[in-house]
Image 1 (tube, rainbow, N blue to C red):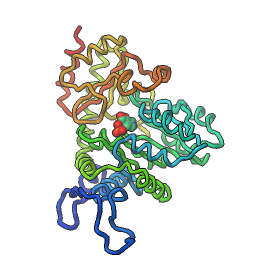
Image 2: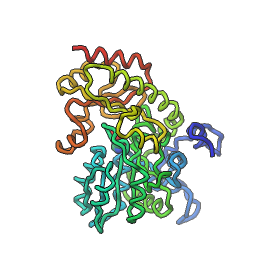
Image 3: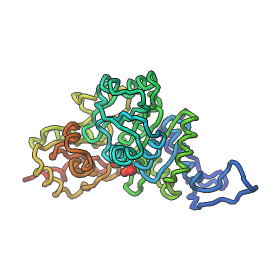
Length: 378
Ligand SMILES: Cc1ncc(COP(=O)(O)O)c(C=O)c1O
């Protein structure tokens, strides 16, 4: 088996028909059929499209799954996964999920009789205590956004197997380069491919990868029936983004380490959340299930007005809602990425009005530091 760095470049080889090294963009909705009622092959792009298929295969390969499914956004990918459940089902989810994930569960799927309960996933006993006869799945996101709490993927997957539940892991923050939950026993991996997979802040996309054939069949049925598929051009952008995922993340991770150490030494900063610090509470566990600390660094400056003034003064870093792009992005989770999360849950997650999240880019680290330094000047 080739290493991931090689698979990023050679996993999705080009076009067998022409030898083109870049997979062509099959910008097409329908395909000529050879017989009435043709089975197999390509028929209609909602069901299958060659460019999307190449991306789905590449993502399945990178995550160690059997099949991938690409959608028009990360939330659309999660929505497809939640369509595997039915009225009367109960889902246990981590308290530290991305706000949009809990919003779709609480405000949309609840209308269809699917109940969700949030518990602290760092504590296995809390998960176990929440399991009911109608519980069907455990939903985790590790490390969590933005305070980087770590869930024991192997332990949650083992508990789920024992109790006959499905496990769903949002792997957006790590990408398959740093963490592969299917190899740790998880059933379904989801990505907001808008982030590291695309990597250039130019495409909105989501991907689901599974191993079991039955789940793959069900997900393909949902994907074709509900129709939130990724278009050919956006699929191509992700295939292109994937080629440099390894080198981008290497550089971003290296920069994040420098930024985190610099922030920790600043008198204005009360607390720094960074998985690479040995005294981060999830450091050891994270190391046991992932191969790097990633590029996210969050820091608390203790005063909401000060945090806002920093964000108003940054010039190089982009004040924005996303992460994982080549440019450094800064965000105030309290009102931005987690604005839709109820206040009480935000506080439980450590999201104060003075917490700033950085998604460190590939710029020269000295320039990112200089930018933050000038923004912190009173
Ligand atoms: C961890 C995580 N999951 C899912 C999503 C949703 O993805 P998208 O914005 O592509 O719909 C996001 C977006 O910020 C995210 O950070």
